[in-house]
Image 1 (tube, rainbow, N blue to C red):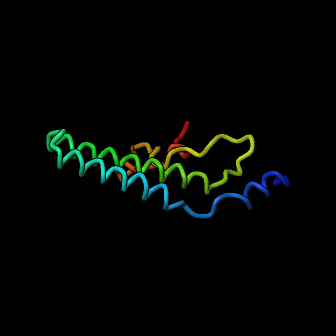
Image 2: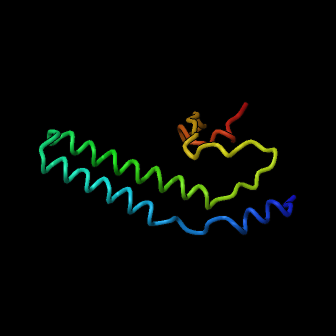
Image 3: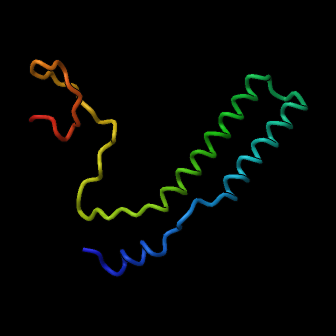
Length: 106
């Protein structure tokens, strides 16, 4: 059952992902990388690692903000399983089939 508190949480949630924090982190990483490259503080492969780490930080920040836009309405139920939770089982004449974990025979 939806309570007033749950409805208020749904209505007051952020609707979009904020772009300013993403741009700030991404821009900061680009400036840091440029300074490290110009002053030759790190070797080239390490600078690429800094760029990769910055991209990972931006992705992590995006996923965190995106999670705040989604409200779970499950109350007292187990969370949904991963989409990749698949099992193989042998079928009849059709060979092996790919089935979802929650449909696997006990």
